[in-house]
Length: 390
Image (cartoon, rainbow, N blue to C red; front, side):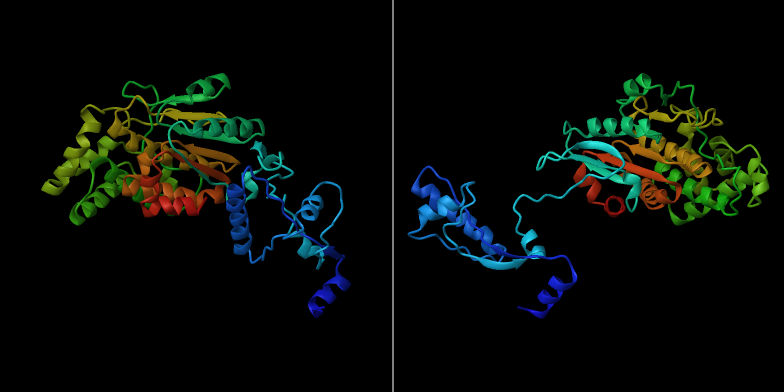
C-alpha cells in the first residue's frame, strides 16, 4: 500500500473497501447492443477506466447488477472511502443553501435550488436567451421573492412589460415620454455626501452622455465640450467646492447656450445636434429639473413610449440618476436592466454599464443584465467584461 494512503487511513476517518463496478446494457437487438457497448466503453475510456466484457459470464454479470446484493463475478479492487466516493454514479452538484430565495428544482435529484446572490463574490447576474425563452418570467419571479425578503428592486424597462406587476404589488411606475410628468435633469449632483471629485466625475459622465446624444466628436470638439460643461456649472456658482453642490444645477439648455456663446464652428455643430432636446421634437423631457425621488421599495422606469433612437439616451440618464441615489443610501438592492443591448451597442453607454457591474458590490447592489441579442452583447469588450463581473 502507498504510504500516503496508509497515512490517510490512520489520520482521517477513512475506511477500506473491496469494490466492484459492473454495468448492464439493455438493447432490443444485437446491433443496437454493440453500438451502445462501444459508446459506454468510449465514455469510460475517456475517464481512464478500462472496460472488459463479461465473456462467457453474461448470466453472472446480469445477476450481479440486479438489486439482490449478490456479486457473482467477484472482480474486486481495494479502495478507501475518498476514492470510492468519486465512483458514486448518482452524485449531483447541490445548489441548496441555508438562506436566500427559491429559484427552481434540481432536475437531477429533485432538491430545491435556493441561494442568496448577495452571499456570492458579487451579486451581479447576466441572463442570456432568445425571445420567448422565459427570461422575463425568471426575472419577475426573482424580483417578487427578493421584495418579500426586504430587498429593494429597481427595473429599467424598455417595453413597459413590468408595469402590471408594478401596479399589482404597490410599486411606482415612472414612465418617460414627451408628455410625461416625470423629469430627470442629467446635470443633477449628489449634494448630501461630501466627495471632492464629485463634479469632476459628473462632468466625465456628461461627456459620455453627450456622445450618446450627439454621436462621435472630434478631439477639438471634445475639448470644447469639456470647457463648456465646466462653464455651465460655474454660471450656476457650482465649483469643485462641495459646499456649492447644493446650488440648483444647470439644465441642458444652459449647456446649449454656452456652446452657442463660444461662437466657433465646432461648438455650433454640437449645439445644433443638441437642439432637438432644447426646442425640437424631444424638447422638455431631459431639459427640466428632476421632480421625483426613488422612495418606493419597487420602482420601474418605463421608456417604451419614447422613439427608438431616444431610448439609449433615456436609459443612460436613468442609470446615472439611479447611481446617484444608490450612492446616497447604500442598502441591499437589485437593479434589473432589460434589453441591455440598447446600451451595449454604443461604446460610451456600454462603458457606463460596465462600470456599474464593477462598482455595484461596494454599494450592496446586485446588477441583473438581460438581453436576447447574445452575439451583439458578447461581441464587444464591455459586454464580455460585464459577463466576467457577474
